[in-house]
Image (cartoon, rainbow, N blue to C red; front, side):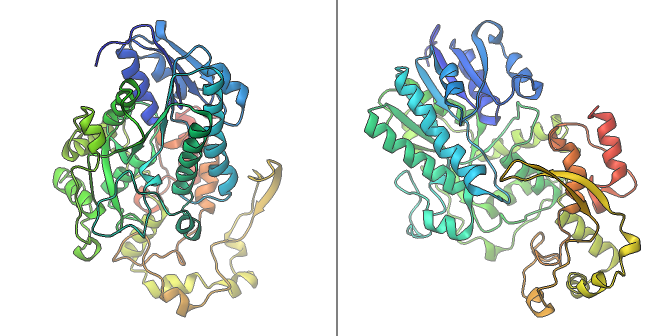
Length: 473
């Protein structure tokens, strides 16, 4: 690739996992970069960008809100190209899909494209996702998925998988806008992005590897995935921007394989960790396609192999302190499994505990629970209101032991903790509400008063230590 001295481009979502790598590589190639962040006052979003070589003279940071059109115009003004990466990424429970995911993704994309068109931008690279290609249950099972495949919108709605739906609808809206307004856009569809972490935060795909190192398979075991190195994703964006013959969608994965294949490779490469090996019956075919990203390969991209992706990912987790802190980050479902194994709590006993409604109603636990009063913000109205937690809200009065017994283990295939008998998020919320804005996984971690493999980092003693060592007020 030739140097592009003096050309000015905008990167939305520049402080994110992929965005940070893209900004870095663009600066190395001589570009002047307008990078957007959510909060200019937050050093966790800005400092790592400002530390890049060339940043002092050729990087400008802008605070941008996808739903604030004026902030988008300010960031794009004076640029000849736009890389649109900014989009909400929530892969766990979504309470309000429309406001948390769909509106920011779709309206935000249209706002960026509208500003680009009005300001005369030459080309826009839109970052979509493999999540806009799968899930696609009606695609032929023996055919490798490619750029012709789209995620099934109705299937996403029925299953409540809102992130793939948001990426699918946002990308389709982008193509419709481009056709109607005659705007030159090109799309990159990355798979599961892994590799060295630049920002001081842990993204969803790297958290997946960390949980594997913890011994947790959770809900991943029956999926196919497309592993790809984060540097390759950033390079793909630059390739399709600079090569004007690049058109349409570009699936960006090193290979497509079953999650069990990936987990086995992690286990082989990281014998010092207790990485679970999934049973053969969860690995239908181990379909592995090396030519899934043919369009990018034809443009000259040489993908880093999966083995190196895993090595770079684990090494980054270690160097950033995440791997050493893996016991502190154990999900509560895994700590539940640890308690059951250590103290001999059976599946039936756990199910019976989930039916303790009568005992609670009669006040049998009243002396064991200290009421906690706090304030919460309603996610729909934004209004703050007081709340007092005085009972265990994990008890399920409307279920029965027969129904509970039908549920499969949710965190360990051979375990006993299910979605019906696991402890709910109240205690985690108690500690997490204090550390959430800081992003606990990005700072030092501490526990107190309990074995971290039993209680994770939750517990007031641990909260006190975390707030103190991280200077959180």
